[in-house]
Length: 420
Ligand code: LLP
Image (tube, rainbow, N blue to C red; front, side, top):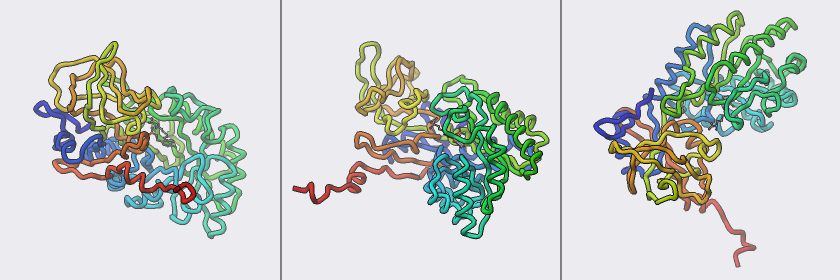
C-alpha cells in the first residue's frame, strides 16, 4: 500500500497535489512519501516478529537520499552499505555505526580501514584475502572486527540475470562447499571475530521458494560450522523481496517471508539479520514527469516525456516495467510508446502500452521508482541530475537539489596546453 492516490480526479502524494510539486520544483522530479516509507518499514519489521533478536539493515544502495535514510534511522533500521560513500551517508543520517553492515565484493583496503575507524558493526567478507587484509588492519588498531563469510548457496533466484547474485558462477560470495575450511582459517586470524554467515541471492524475487532453498543450505552450513567447534551467533539473510510493479502482479508479502523464515530457521539459535531495500523504498516513490510532445508514430504515437533513461535507468537496463499514470486522468485511454529525450533507442519506457490519454504539457508519473531510481541517475546527454522531494502529510521539502548541467560543467576544465 502506498500514499500516491487520486483525489477528485487528481493524483496526490499524501496530502500534496503532485501538480503543486511540479509547479514549484519543476520536472522531472522524484517524489517520496514519508508515510509510505514508514509503513513499509513497520510492516517488514512486524512480519519478522517472533523470530527472536532480528537486525534490520536497509540496503542503502536502493535509496541513499539522506532524508530517506533519516526516516529509516528513526524507524530503528541500520544500514547495509557497499562503499565508503554509503557509510558516510548512513552515519550522517543518524544510524549508529554498530548497526551498519559493510557488504560488497570490492571493498578497498582504504574502505575497510574507514569502516574500522568508524566502528562498523559487521563486515560481510566476500573472499578469503579480504579477511586477511581486514584482520591485519584491525589487529594493527588493537581491534577484532566482527565478520561473517558471505556464501554463495548456488540457487537460481529466478529473477532478471542482471540482478541475480546467488548462482555458482556469480561474482558474489564464496562457494558454499569451500566455506567450512575457509571459515576455519578466517576464525584463526587475530583481528577477526567470525560471527557467522551471510547470503543474498538476488533482487526482485517473485517467490520466497529460492530464498527457502538458500536458507536451508545456510542452516546446514551453520550446523557444520558448529560441529567443527565454531561459535556462530549471526546469520545475515540478505534482501531480495520483490515488489509489485504491474497492477495485479503477484509478489510475496513480507508476512510470507516471515512465515518461511520462522519455519526454516527454527533451532538455529542465532541473531537473524536482513538487508531489505526495494520492499521498503520501491513503492514509496514516483518519478513525476511532464509530457513534452505526443509525436505521431508508425504504429502508435510516441509520448515523449521530460524524464529519460538518465533519470530512471531501470527500463533501459533491465527492460523493467514502471506503471505510467496521468496526474489528471480524463478517463480516456490510448495505446502509445513512451520515451525520453535522450538520443538512444533504449531511452524508451514502454512500447505498445495502453495508458491514460495524455497530451503535450500534461503531467504524469512512473510508479515504483523509490528504489534504484534517483540513485542510478546520471547526467548523460548533459542533462541535469534529477532532484528529489519528500512529502510528509500536507508539506513537502526538496531533499536533493536539481544539479544543473552548468554545475557539472564547472567541475571540468580544459588544461592550459589545450587552451590555444
Ligand atoms: N543486500 C545485498 C548484499 C545486495 O546486493 C542487495 C541488492 C540488497 C541487499 C538489497 O536487495 P533488495 O531488497 O533491494 O532486493 N539496480 C537493480 C537492483 C540491484 C540490487 C543489488 N543488490 C534494480 O534496479 O532492479
